[in-house]
Image (cartoon, rainbow, N blue to C red; front, side, top):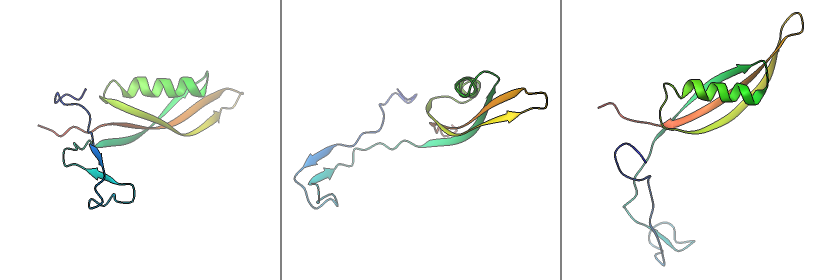
Length: 103
């Protein structure tokens, strides 16, 4: 639940009103909707074990400073090859978190 004590944004839909712009499906949108805004930031996690571990480490580290994380989307995975044969798995993620205005 958001810190303001209210639930997530909702839309109430009602059948039968074609004047609302949703006439093709016969739904009416009420003005009771609350709007939520999310920020998206990119992070890159690294691991010598796996892409999954790299993603997990990125999320764990980001969650120390970013609050109310909602979605992590894998954007890219690659492997960094070192001289001598060592490899590093890298996972680039887009993390979304609820935007909170400064008070």
